[in-house]
Length: 125
Image 1 (cartoon, rainbow, N blue to C red):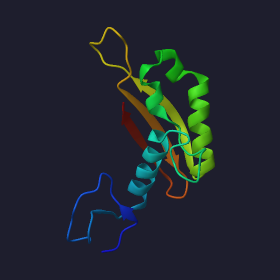
Image 2: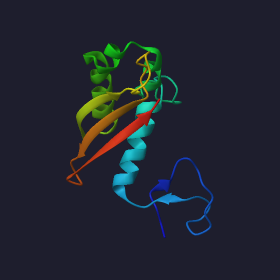
Image 3: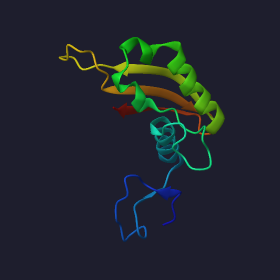
Image 4: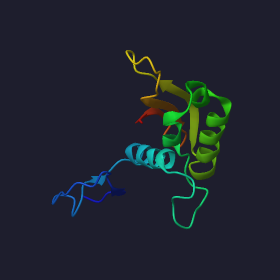
């Protein structure tokens, strides 16, 4: 069966060909959004503006993650590279027992207009 792209991380699968393939649009959009969020600006060859670079927030103060500047970066990246996705919310999830308050995850809730469906992406940092 044909697919849209290899599923990341790569996994060998003789049924799909060389690798396991993504076979539905919603899963493809989520993988592309994850790639967009985890890529640092300047890291992608031939497109130096691509990427939100959320890993840089790992050692930032908690206010920086939920601050307007971070949300603007995420929104701008989505508008530029995935204009069919509507960002609904950005939320930082903190460990319950950590005194430092370091971020462990960021939750993005979004709406996919062509599919008329909502989803969420949780990025573990």
